[in-house]
Length: 78
View 1 (cartoon, rainbow, N blue to C red):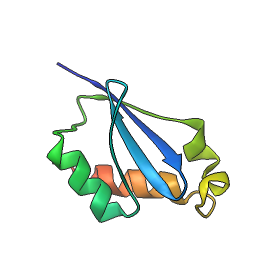
View 2 (cartoon, rainbow, N blue to C red):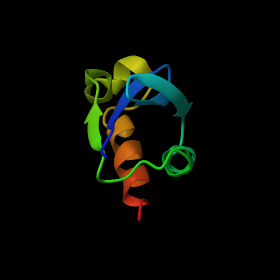
View 3 (spheres, rainbow, N blue to C red):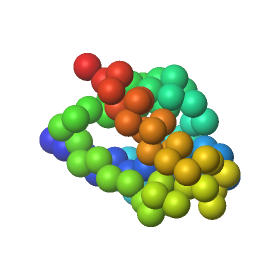
View 4 (cartoon, one colour):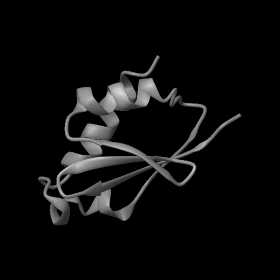
């Protein structure tokens, strides 16, 4: 069964929400990847991002950096 998995940016961290519950946050690709794996996130889940990812420079990231971190962490999923 697929779950709703949502990413948002907040003060330099990527927050991971599953079914509207905040699971945790990460600042690096490796830390986000570990969080995804620990919570059995897969490509079968419904993956979505907040507008804070698109405008992550307002949340302490360089422009485009938050999306890059998410993409690279998801690429590590098998």
